[in-house]
Each structure stands twice: as structure tokens, then as C-alpha cells.
Length: 286
Image 1 (spheres, one colour):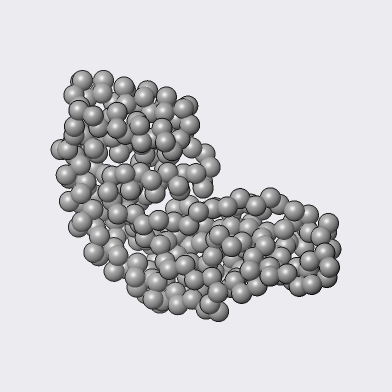
Image 2: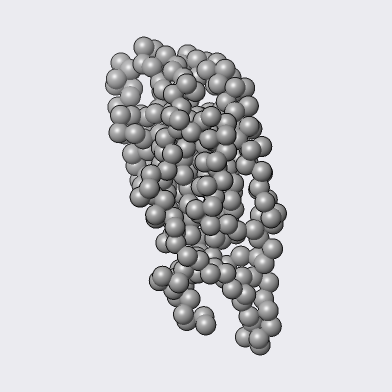
């Protein structure tokens, strides 16, 4: 569960105020800002429901305790972005939910995680995402393999976290078997144009520099494979390496995780787009 130091980072005051037009008429949006530094965290519709990061954490952790999932649950990733405007916390469920898939003598560890999100802008509403994450390497890098997202409802006055967590448990039970079968199939599936078609797909999403890094990694893996064609699973490994070792931005890595999961037909469902808004000095708007 969350460490005390992490809780302190989330525990800051916010102020929500009505915005007025230049003629003094009430606008359709409210402003949320931090008194500690006078920085704007977001501008959002008047009817959008917002809670504090602290309350969001409290709601989820209370349900995890009621479901007996608090013991052994750890924090796999903690992200507080844009001066605290957006929060993403990955709760890794206890080891009893962990699974291993042995592909070619190299066991892969898969961990179910619940991602709690919350924010003070229109694009990061309070809610949960959940998925199966693969441990890419010993440094703790992880990659989304299969995931879902809770229904996006930004205008309601409350959210039933109990229902969401039960949905997570159902998801884990239903999908692990399917995931095992998919990975085993990927370990023996290949085609002569797999590397080239993947390169073309990557070029539509990423920069030329990333494509060049892809080329280098594919060449390296073919040499390791003694000139044989790479399987779908080996190509997946190439892309997970690029996502976890060549992309520093959390938001960009999340976006690539989703695209790779779709590419290899893991069934990941779409996430909401993230729209960047500039930080503004609230004092200048008063």
C-alpha cells in the first residue's frame, strides 16, 4: 500500500473557483489551483466531479482492505504529474495472483495491477484501470500485456469502488487462461514479413530515431537467434524493450503500451487521450 512519504506528496490544498468572462458573466468552466504556488492545475466543466488525490487513495485502499487484498499488495509505480494535476498509482496485487509463462526456457512473470487515476482536469477523471503487466527486466521495468479501463463518468457525485474492484477480480480470473494461450501461440508463430510489417507500423507512430533503434534491436535479436526468423513473441520483446528503455515520459510509455497490446491482439481497451494544458499563474487571473 502507499508509503507515508507518498501520501504526503498527495496531500496539498486546492481551490475550485468559478471563471468569469471579460464582461463579468459566469463561464461554463471552473478553475482549480494550488494556493501553495499559485499554479493552475486545471480548467474543467462546472458539472465535472472532482475529489482530492488523498480521498481517491483512501477510497481504493479501504476497498482493498475489505476484500482482503491489502496484505501483500505493493506499489509498482507512483506518478504525480504536472505539478500534481494528475496522479497515476499502480497497485500490484499479492503474489498469489502472479503467474509465470515459460516460453522457450525463459519464464516470464506476469502481475495483475490496478491503476488508480485522478486529476484536476477534464482528461484524467477519478477511476480505475487494470491489467496484466509483464516484468521486462530485473530493474523493475514493466509492460502492459492486457488491460481494461473503468467506465468514464465525470459528472456523477460518487463512484462505486467496490463494484470496480470486484470487476478487477473477475477480469483476472477470466483473462489469465486466455493470455497464457495467446503467448504460447505467439512463441511459435512467425512470417517472412513480420519484422518489416512491424517496422512500417512503428514508423506511423514513432519518430525516425525510434525506428532506427528498432532496426538495431531486431538485428541484434536475429543474430542471437542465429539468423532464424523472429517469432511474434520475440517481436513483442523488441517493442517492450523500446517502450521501457527508450521512452522516458510516463504518458508516452502508457500510449505505446496500449498500441503494442493492440498490435499483438491482447485485447487491451482504449484509454482516454491526454491533452496537455499549460501551467498558468493563478494570481494573474484574479
